[in-house]
Length: 291
Image 1: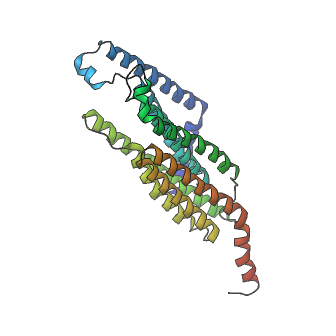
Image 2: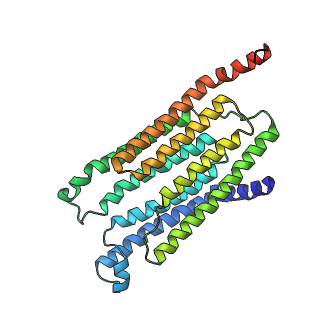
Image 3: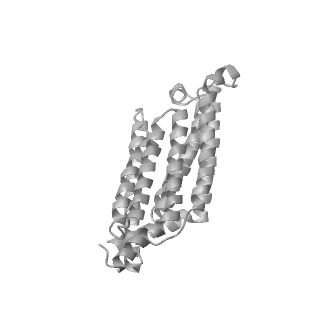
């Protein structure tokens, strides 16, 4: 079973990572953005039938919000595909998406302003917009530090065990892609029926919490080293705080996001510095006959 799912995952990953797919993704984003701008402008000029006009916004910044929503969707797919690479990379990818959500939040505030934008209309939201943009910048810098601490350390010295662990993560990733499709399809059906969609990214990040815990438990099959268990469990805790950040207002969202990244970075640094000593002490004790 693991061999079969690994083959499916590897094909999907190759297709997604190809230069052709990335160009197509960029093309879709550009066409969506320009098409949304054109549709909104046509609505402002009264060129649509009233049935269509009632369903379309009249603020051009909705086009930015739509383009960023699609960009985030593509980034979530990339996040799922990184699960098979390493726990640290997948955690970093989650924070990348949070920073983009904060940038999107800044543009989303503009959808409530009249056009042309005036200071009196913007003033009540300036603090929230600055918090979201500042939080995105701090997370960007923090991620640079986080990735600098990345070290490729095998979970096990046994090649078969390493293959089994990676193949298990690929199976989890495929299951997450299925869940992602179900959530997206459900939201699409609700929109088609004129209903309010579920909060897509908040829902998916909740699912990611359970997948992170599952990956922690899977790792225990191949290594029960205290340092590894604590690091992976701590990363899962940081994603819980990340999920809480998505539920708050912009200021709390930025603060919780930065705090969650600080926790993940501290765990990464501590693990790199102290893990060799924590592993060596039990091994030396065992060789000396200490139990």
